[in-house]
Image (cartoon, rainbow, N blue to C red):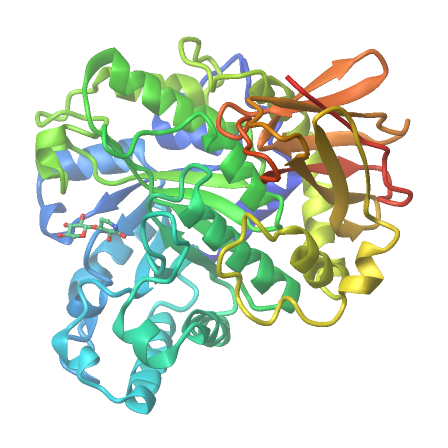
Amino acid sequence: MALGAVTAGAVAAAGLLTTAGTAHAASTLGASAAASGRYFGTAVAASHLGEAQYASTLDTEFNAVTPENEMKWDATESTQGVFTYSAADQIVAHAQAQNMKIRGHTLVWYSQLPGWVSGLSASALQSAMDNHITSLMTHYKGKIYAWDVVNEAFQDGGSGARRSSPFQDKLGDGYIEHAFRTARAADPNAKLCYNDYNIDGINAKSTAVYNMVKDFKARGVPIDCVGFQGHFNSASPMTSDYQANLQRFADLGVDVQITELDVAGSGTAQADSYTKVVQACMAIQRCTGITVWGITDKYSWRSSDTPLLFDGNYSKKPSYTAVLNALNGTGTGATNGGTSSGTSSGTSSGTSSGTSSGTSAGTSSGTTSGTSSGTSSGTTSGTTSGTTSGTTSGTTSGTTGGSGGSGCSAVFASVNAWTGGYQAQVTVTNTSSSTISGWKVAWTQPSGSTIASLWNAVQGTSGSQTTATNAPYNGQLAPNASTTFGYVVNGGTPTPPPTLTCTTN
Ligand code: XIL
């Protein structure tokens, strides 16, 4: 398994452009995903492994597993200091025998947490958390591809605030960082993920997580991946900015993984949603794998929603075929909406490998932290402390630029730069006295540089100019209100900044 993890990483880094239209489309989910260096996994319950159809469907179709409950705190340390691994061990042994990747889920979470944990004092809780992380990661050392180190630490809604939990309430904001550092020390070869739900699209909660990850990368806090749970239903549908959201995280220099996918519904509507999710992952080089939250509808945690790929009799549903086709690059029906998907899928998979490794290696000191403080105001409620001090003046001067236009202004800032590329953030402000319903920013992209991906706006061209038109969700701006969009450039420097022209639509 250790070998498998290394190999998969190398394959992922080598590029994933060989997917579309392969002559020999694979016929199982796992093999189809593997053709592009990805995995296709499922949540597994140890108690069902003895059911022949359950095990045979698992072994035939999937090449990764996540224990659905067996590694959670209540299952592994229901009494302080007494560790129980038997159920999780069963899943790990099964997965290893089948050469499957294993996602460890989860080390620090407010839910399925035994009562004794919430009764501890701050210092005792800190020790208990460290001991829990270290014990589990040591027990499974070398066997886990990626751990969900911290799960669901942010609140729903528009605040972008942390969720109340024993960890948050007693240890403060720093507990997440501390957990990741402890995890890195325990098993340096496991990828360390932050995992959450309702962060699938661009919203206040996902932006709060985004800012945390950006801060972690800037300060060298070890984080390798973000898990997007992907529990979709009519109350929490998949949104058209799904791919752009995953891409903006990938552009920070972390892998993105879809970790608990299930979609309420049936028939074509359900299949189309699955297609969109899989196509989005396939279009992002750093989207390294997809896990569905169960094999069969009959054992789903939301069984009445029939959200999975196999029905209660293990028959393949239309959603299964949709996923298989999308993994093989032969999906047709659904699109990701808007024009940006076409642009980014082609360029981002080919180009971002160079930029992302460069990002994490070379750019985290200095420029990132400084500029983010200057540019993210307005979108960033509650940015973590530690990022804003120090370096603003050095980086913003020389990398900001902008100009008015008619009714709106656009200000350019470089939020990250490395040898061979940079990441830009443009702040669009309504400078008129009435609400505007749309905007367009135009600039000339210097020859020799290309835009690898652009998010929070729709990329286009107008003559020799590159344009970015508002996305459906950020066109409307009240007087003086601002929004931002971002893009990654390969082959250029952010100095001098481009001259931007903003016009209202
Ligand atoms: C769920 C399991 O599927 C259920 O069996 C259990 O009763 C509750 O937890 N987010 C997560 C998962 O991170 O661990 C949850 O799994 C689903 C929501």
